[in-house]
Image (spheres, rainbow, N blue to C red):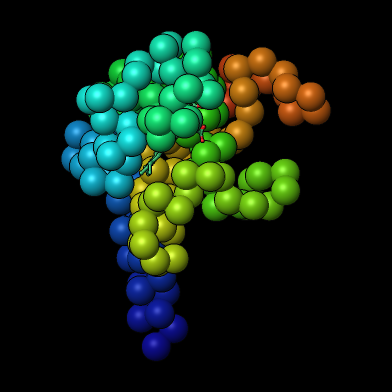
Length: 156
Ligand code: HEC
């Protein structure tokens, strides 16, 4: 009985690890972004550079930066907008005020769906690379470190 239980636990751990290792942009992330984010981050949306020039205007038009390609998406993780994806999608576990980021609700229509999709994105970014730091220090929040950047996975 004990051995059976151990085997079940061990198998479970291997399955979770294998899933995390297998998450790729093309298979998992691109379809998720397309189905949940493209209405406001699609081909019609501004590039991140244009968005950052005039955020107020785009906010009024309900347009976020374009996120349709791998290159466009990783700009909101590494550079120039380090941590933006994590800050907006975090469920409140890592935010200073413990409130979810304002795009968290877009991850799904139920708690279960949001949690599944958040976990998938965390596995893709890298469980240990999921942090909310900006490229430079902001108030009390330190700048993202080389050590944190090294932990990014972002498999294509
Ligand atoms: C209903 C429209 C809408 C949907 C759907 C939506 N967003 Fe947004 N998003 C916006 C708008 C508008 C902004 C800009 C205003 C703001 O900063 O909140 C924004 C901003 C962002 C930002 C910050 C960009 C930056 O450089 O500061 C990120 C990251 C983001 N969204 C990610 C996502 C992700 C990922 C999804 C899908 C899970 C998503 N959004 C779904 C409308 C949307």
